[in-house]
Length: 118
Image 1 (cartoon, rainbow, N blue to C red):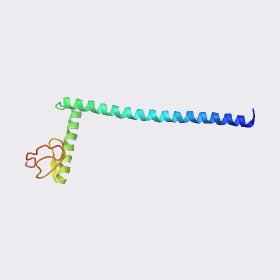
Image 2 (cartoon, helix red, strand yellow):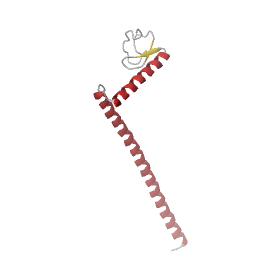
Image 3 (tube, rainbow, N blue to C red):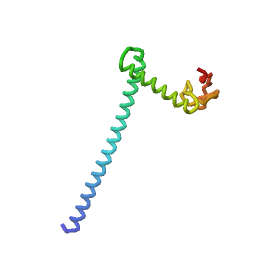
Image 4 (spheres, one colour):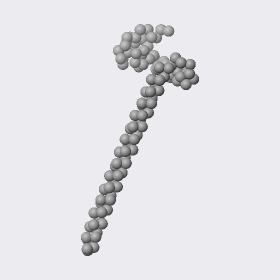
């Protein structure tokens, strides 16, 4: 076998090796992406299950349930404060900002019945 035949075989083998490495890298990337997607899906399922459990047990005298309820109430207070700073209140149906004096929500069309009178 001559020098050029050996060189040709070496180039072909190197090209095959590089192709295999590129495919492996592509496969690895795809598997890592698939794993991240499934982990995000699992997190959402856990959240749904936790929300369902909370909804079913929110009237029970449990410390963790009370903690969650307190955080929910605080989030609502903060949201109300934000709406007030923006010059309105939250729509009772969709939660969008409803400016003072507005008769209908611009987001969902809900009729606003004196939500500004307290």
